[in-house]
Image 1 (tube, rainbow, N blue to C red):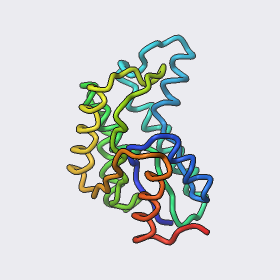
Image 2: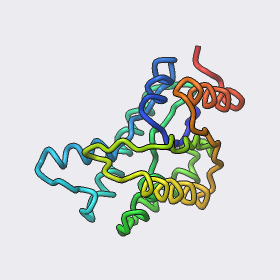
Image 3: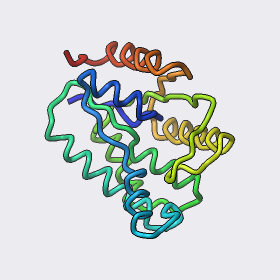
Image 4: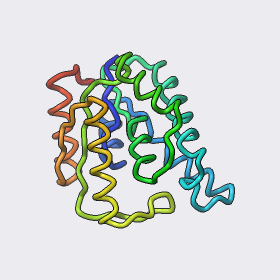
Amino acid sequence: MANQCGRRSVPGALRHLEIDGCAVVKEAATDVIALQQALGRPEPWRDPAFPDQVLALQRKRQRNADAYARDVLFYDRSPVCTLALCLDLSLAAPPALFDEVARMTTEHRYERTVFFIRNQGFVEATAARRIGFEESLVFERVHELTYREAGFVLVDVPAASLPARVAATRRAASRALPWPK
């Protein structure tokens, strides 16, 4: 199975790829935040246990995805993204997170290519994502540097319409990987 690693993505692009026949592993942090908020914790990302909770869900989703043999598997975020989140929030990254990032690279669980979807020129706030546009640019830079430092190769997917971003991702993926029919 070939894997594509956690691009900075927007749900529309991933849903489009999924409908086109690609396997997609959902992003974990938003679901952890939603559950914790439903449990009455308004800012769960401030909890020192937050990175561990995100990592646990990422691992579970990866194990579930392993059951499906697909040519291309897209991850909407990866443990490298969780590490970037820790850096951005000034949270101590748990040792298990560093272990997982090392495992990702040594066991080749993910391809070295990361589709890095650039900011679209705006941010829509949600209950889970409360940062403004300027903060999102800083966070984007932290993500970029964290992936590069971990040894990944970034394929820039510039700001564009949804069909254009999906087409750029498909072109880049098809050069290296068999594309689902």
